[in-house]
Length: 399
Image (tube, rainbow, N blue to C red):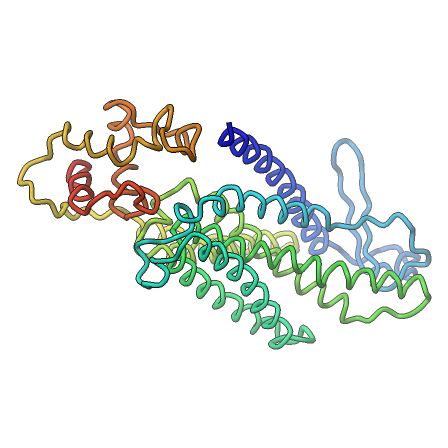
């Protein structure tokens, strides 16, 4: 019954997380489109009122006239629309999911027993949980300090962008060395997602509140508040697509279980940022197909790196292994979890809906079994003590 409660909570939290993320990202993309699509107002009265730009749009059978003021409008309304709860809800629900899915069983889901770093491979579950939290916190601290030190007045944002890009490569590498593959992809995305939410909480909303307070008091707002908010919003824009990709990556073991998973991850992060840049420029009336082309090229490089090797298995058998022998290994090492009625207490249903109760089910999932077993990702934490000889046997069977 406990596992059912956990599964149902996971189900509902995932739904909430997706709803909040769609609302936040959708609104963010809309405002970027609006900001980049503004045109100088043609009406002289609008310009006298301080209107910086405007956009006319049609949607849902009606017409909309959006305006952006460069200075304080004549009268600031009380019912201003604020965008922050969507960001907070997305992060909080995502963190709750991380607790339920990973931190409840860290020995299986966080610890990387195949790490090249001995201390990481030998971590206990509670140590992995602490390290994961520290990893998220330090990711925000390092990113925030880079913003404050490299471009404090928003005059060196280009250099800052290069610094953030390098930081994400380092984060991708460290995460794959310290944590299991699936957790590494998730935590790298969580570092960016944490920065996005923290940007809203610590910089964007407080700056906007100070601006509104100054306007209502008849004072001139500090221009740095607007510039800092813009800087962090731009960063959030380019984090968006990579974060979404990394959050859905746990379904694709060929990426996170690869020996060079951190390279694949970095390539996909940059691909997402390049594709996002195309849409940012498109909203400003600039069509630059070189950006999505470069993004697709990086995706193809990631595809090439992750492609399974055609090298023959290192098996002592000179002929194809006996299928009955393979089935015995899978039943002993995999079926405790991957069964319609798992015997492992942590599961009430087979993970990802994949079960190996029969030979037909094993044959249908042959390629997937080979990928996760050969990489060492499965069994999780090698909790069923699969031997190197058994891994070689499954590799030879798959090929």
